[in-house]
Amino acid sequence: MHSRLAHDLADLPDALDATRLLATGLLDELAERPVIPSVRPPEPEPLPGEGVGLRAALEEFAERWEPAFGASAGPRYLGFVTGGSTPAALAGDWLTATVDQNSNSSLDGAGQHLERQTVGWLRELFGLGAAHEGAFVSGATMSNTVGLAIAREWLGERRGVSVAEAGAAALGPVRVVSGAPHSSVAKALSVLGLGRAALVPVRTLPGREAVDPAALDEALAQAGGPCVVVANAGTVNTVDFDDLRAVAALKERHDFWLHVDAAFGAFAALSPRHAHLVAGMDAADSVCVDLHKWLNVPYDSAVQFTRRRDLQARVFQNAAAYLGPLGDTPDLVHLTPENSRRLRALAAWFTLRAYGREGHRDIVERCADCAHALGEAVDATPGLRLLAPVRLNVVCFTLAEDPTPERLAAFAGALADEVFLTPTVYAGVPALRAAFSNWRTTGEDVRRIAERLGAAARAGLPR
Image 1 (cartoon, rainbow, N blue to C red):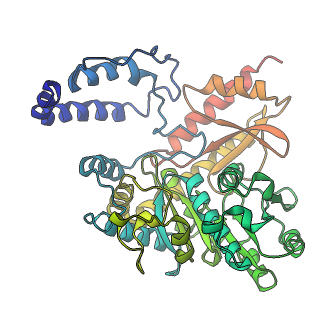
Image 2 (image 1 turned 120 degrees about the horizontal axis):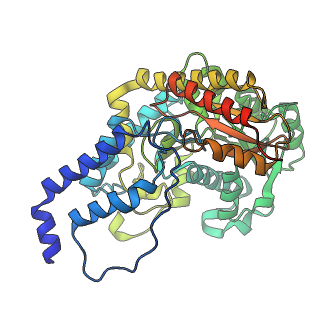
Image 3 (image 1 turned 120 degrees about the vertical axis):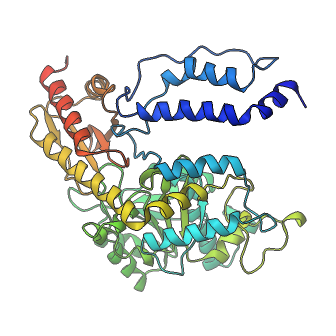
């Protein structure tokens, strides 16, 4: 064994304790450190010939790299839709690396069984029925890709071909219709060989991002055969929801696969105040949910559900003697694009076991309350303009005058040490979004953010 490895093995308990101290120090200051630091990253260095060992590497990371990392796990990082890691999820993730399982095969230990139990808990959490089976993937983009891959195979089934065997060209033209699809849907269609041009936009309700059911009805009538509908359960800009029951009811007249992109909107099911927003989601043929958002587990983690596991296995089966037969209950290696992956389910198992439905309901409702409070503050701040009602956990707003991308970038930059916001465009207007999904965020954080927004708006920006 190499001398550095042998030394680090002998020193591992103490070295891990030093790592723990560094990690807890970071967590202790998380709420007060700059959300986006001004420190520049170190310049690249050549690969070392002789390593320095774990302790020296840890010290170098703490000195040179850690100060340049943002507080994305903290309570005022409101960019994208980013959760943090609950204490239990953090412990679960550490143990994930420790046990280092690639639990895609039943030839391994209990990892597959833990994942199946965790998927069952998540299915119950989101109000889905037993017909929905699921598996862990890396994020919402991959979850959408897997769901649409199964939809592609369903289209082939309707047309008498197996796309998994014959290729996407055997399908001919495909129509995927949606009101306000997330960008990952077009990306998935490109990856799947269906093409971005297959995505057909459908009119949304006036002043909304929710699809107009009447317009969807017309689009389906014009489809000329089986097609795919991507419904939204929480759009990125305004967290708008399609009427999932109305969309599903159209199956009585039209032949389509219903995929619901519920990346973070699925968590509305946890709150009695908001559960009506996802009513009808169980009628979907496939569902996307991102877990490193509102479940507050570490990156990367998501889950996909489908009613047609048989088609899923047809798409993703991996024929190799060492993996064994497909069987009636396919191993996870036959259900997602990855042959190898970490045991993502463990962090989710830990946080669900530790805090249960009620603990995660508290996170969802507290984040929603914070979003509504910030929306009211924005609405009351001269120089700012709310662009849409706060429906759940996102505040979409802009400058009251001359909201150019450049002025908005300067405005967001002036706030970056206190709060991180991401840019967007809503109804043709450049804007900013504040997305609440971190378990640490409280009303005190909203007060601090509102004060900084007001001060920045009063200071004005050059034209």
